[in-house]
Length: 310
Image 1 (spheres, helix red, strand yellow):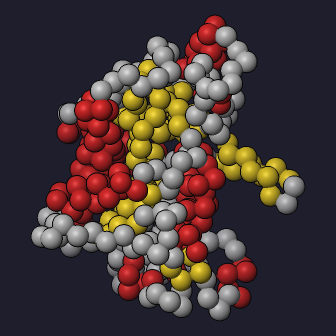
Image 2 (cartoon, helix red, strand yellow):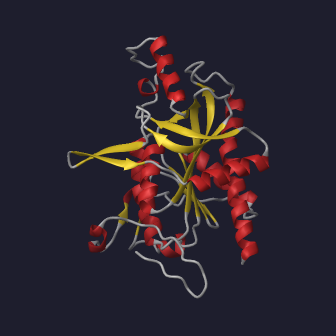
Image 3 (cartoon, one colour):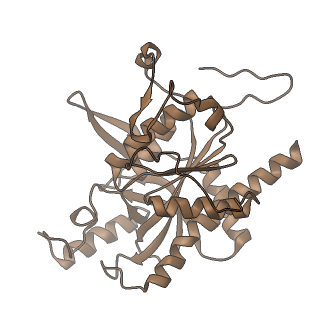
């Protein structure tokens, strides 16, 4: 799919799908969203989307929707933000103006399913110039709790910048680079906010919360405290600043579809000092506000700049 400039306007960036079989479908059913190309007018519903924010928890994404609505002056006086995916319990989706918020569940399989259908939704809706940002929580590596990490590269548990998936019995390796200019823009926004520490660094993406992240408190553990510390020290030496479970497939799929993408996660603890979350609910809640404050500021800044240009 190519885009052409109109007059002197710059070319817009479309959302790409790489699947010739889609052209043969009479209807494309986005099953886990309870949406479809025949049952819904996707272009009317989503054609104006310029920013997509995704996060694990449905509750957190609704909270972000309410927050960004207030920031952009688009509050619903009745505070009613209907879940667009109410026909399913798999994911939740909310929209305010040009901002779409979608939950993705926990781990690579869950976010991958969501992204397949989200990318197709944006494609069918003929969206252009879309920026997508994952906001979430993570375990820090040598960072104070409450630090926000903007991901430079997502690396696997061997510290390599790659995402591996077995397709038709063969291992396919995909690139996990994220948009560096977007990462720098977000870092600059954090400096302007001056509310919390923000760093740009590598994020390690694992398949598991416990053994895969070298925790000592799972149901199974076959290594020592010394083994754990040695591994996390090696991760830190490799530039890893935090650990989570979605960034690799997120980076790979966004790059394939031409989406400008970033990962913004707050650290809830320093994994070099422990495994379990011992901070109070109030403190953890305050930490979780940091990514949405940063991303909200960025979106508002971008929309204000666009309004001035027009």
